[in-house]
Amino acid sequence: MFEKLTDGIKYRNMLNSLLDDVILSSGFMQEITPKSLGNGVTAATIVNYDTKEIKIFVDKGKLKIACKGEFVLLTVALFHELRHAYQYKEMLLNTASVEILCSHLASSDNRDYYLQNYKYDLAEIDAERFGVIHAYDYLRKIYPDKESFELVLEYLHSKKEKRDTLYLLINVDSISNEDSLRKAFDEVYEKAKCQEYSLLDVSYLIRRTKDPAAQYIVEHDHEDIYYRFLDMKNKLERDKIYTAVYIHEHPEYKYLIENNSNIDILELEKLLADS
Ligand SMILES: [Zn+2]
Image (cartoon, rainbow, N blue to C red; front, top):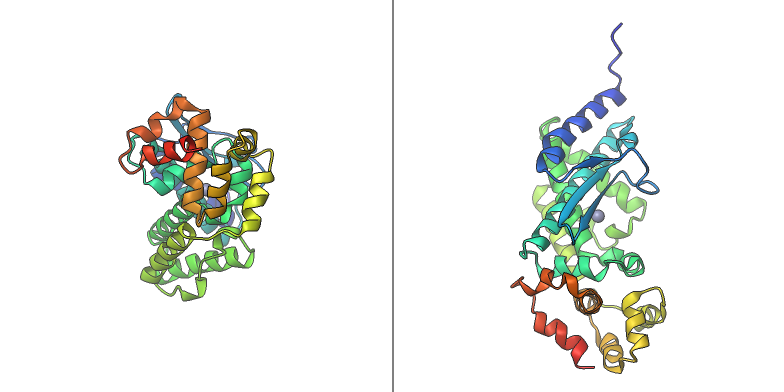
């Protein structure tokens, strides 16, 4: 007896071929883990700065899908993770942009900072932009162009409706074609880079004892840094000072910034040395 090709099986087969064609062939996916990566997490990308290994973990158990919407969601998620893998690769090759490098280093070992700043996280916005655009290209190989674009739009609207914080700044209503899709993501990336913080956010972060960078500032009574925090205008500046603290605490990872011409290591060192 042949198994009836239900929609669920059809979508699962398509996702498996996406995994084979794109993710596996990228060379990053060395492990597929059946155990849970966390609540609702289907895939995650992990870098080890010591061994210089980058791995995309995919929980294949979570790829049991029943509808086209979920298929689109997982397609975006896989391309999103692939982008994180490329970001880490560029960091290891010393070619990453200052935004991506500092975004990752600032939140290394610092879950509080990552969560607190998630909605303006430049590495996350960059990964989502890549995820959505490449998912659209991939869908076009399966469905007609118009339908593929509508599927992407449905995905974006559902993210916005679910109040996914990454979509806080994005104007989904302005998206009507591929050009405006790219433009909306480019704009949100620039907006997030310059996003100003309220003093309330700053003093909250400073008081957080679990946040290693804030802890460092409090413990060392670095008044200059504290006032610099108060002066801080945007996410990128904040990422830079957190990166400076991270490298100070982990000099073994200095190699990630000292050979990258996109980042001024003297500027980072000054942030700490001045105090
Ligand atoms: Zn991500």
